[in-house]
Length: 398
Length: 143
Ligand SMILES: Cc1ncc(COP(=O)(O)O)c(C=O)c1O
Image 1 (cartoon, rainbow over the protein chains, first blue to last red):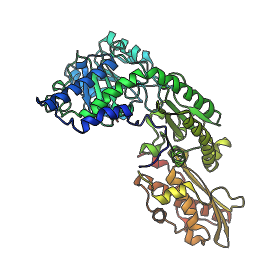
Image 2 (image 1 turned 45 degrees about the vertical axis):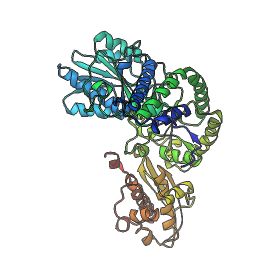
Image 3 (image 1 turned 120 degrees about the vertical axis):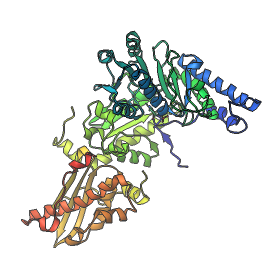
Image 4 (image 1 turned 60 degrees about the vertical axis):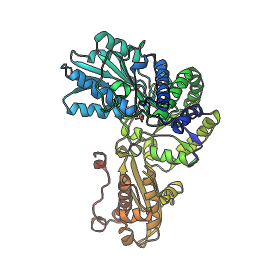
C-alpha cells in the first residue's frame, strides 16, 4: 500500500481508529451470527446491534427507536428525501426547500424528484457560504413538504444555522432534514433541542468503516421503507445488518461526540496558523466564512494555478489533499460549491481543500506550510494564466 | 482515473519548460475558464525547430502532454512538426485517461498555433500549412 505520509483529506474519508477496529474485530471473526436468529450466536449479535443503536441515539440526543442503520450517508439522504416526498406528496405537498451547494447525494436526488413533478427551491448561500435563515422562512409555502439543508458543507466547511432553521420549520410545521455527514463529531448536535426531524450521517467520516451510515427519523414520522425485504430496523430498512461496521460506528459516535471540544481547540490553532501563513501568498482567497467553519477545514483558491496539478505536486511531497477543480471533479466544470459562492471558473479551478482530523500533528502542518508556497511559486512560474494575471490582462474576481 | 508512469514522470520533470527570449513563433491555446492554457515558444531557423519551450496552466495531463510535445518536435523540420497528432502524443505517454484526451488535442493545437504565428511573422498565410486552429476551447466546457 502506498505510504502517504501526511493525510489532509479527512473530509473525503478518515482512517479507522484503533478502538473502532478493536471493537469490530470479534464480529468479523467469531461473532458472525445473524441478529435475527434466536440461538446464542444470533442473540449476541442482536445485543451488539442494540448497544450500537443506543450509542448513536445518545450521541444525537434521540431515542433508540429513532435510529436506522443504513449502508452509507448517501443512502440515508436518498431515503429521507424520497420517502418524505412520497409521504407528503400523497397529501398534496410537493414543494421542497434546499440549497444550491448540497452534496450530490442530496442534489441528484432532488433532481430525480423534480422529474417526478416535485418542485424544489434552491436557496443561495452567498459569498460566505452560509444560507440565510430569513430566506428559508420566506421560501416556506403551504405546500412545502420538506426542508433539507446540510449541517456543514463538505468542501468549504461552512456551518449552517441549523438550530434556527429547525425552530422555523417546527413553528411552520414543515419536516426538517439535515445532512450532517460532515458535522458529526465537529459540532454539538442534539436533534431534539435543535428541532431536527431527520438527520443523515456516515461512518467513514468519523473513523468508522466505509459503507455504514445512519438515518435518524423523529418517531412522529413513519417513513416508508426504501429497501424492502425482511423485518430488520423495525421493518423499515431490510437487509441483514452489517454488525461489525455498525458496532464500529457505535464506538466511533461515542468517541467523536466526546472529543468535539478537545479536537476543535487543537484544530482551531492549526487552522489559524495555516490561514495566517497561506494568506501571505499573493492572490489567494479563503473560500467560505472565516469563523463559521469546521475547525478542521480550509479551502483556498490560488489564482493562476490549476488544482489538479497542485494536488499532484503535493502528492509528490507525500501530502494528500483535495481540490474542487474541474479536473478533479470528473467533469469539465469546477465544483458547484465554489461556483455557488460566486467564484469565477478561473479561480475555482485553483482551489485546494485541506481537511484535518484529531490525528493531524503540528509537524504535518509545518511540512505543509513549508512546501505549499514553493509549489505555488513553481506552478505559477510555468503558468501562462499567471502571466496574464500579473499583467492585469484577464478576469477580475468579483 | 490513473495516470501512466510516463505522464507522472513528465509532470514531475517537465522538459523544455519556460520562455524563449528569441522565439520567432509563439502560440497560445486553451482558456482559463476551462482550466487549461498552453503557450508554446519556437525558435525556427532554416525551416528547422532549433529550440522550443512551453508554459502551461492546467492539470497533470496538460503539463505532461505539452512537455512531451516539445520533446517530439525539437530539432524537427516544420513540416514534420506539423504532422504531430494528438494520438501520437497519447501513445508517447503510454495512454491518457478518457477525460484527459482534450489535453493532447490542446498540445497538438499549441504546436500548430506557434508555427502559424511564425508564418504570419514571415508574411506568409499559414492556413495552407497549418489548417484551422481552435485557439479557444469555448465548447469544451459545455458538456
Ligand atoms: C455532506 C456529505 N453528504 C453525504 C456524503 C456521502 O456519504 P457516503 O460516502 O457515506 O455515502 C458525504 C461524503 O462524501 C458528504 O460529505
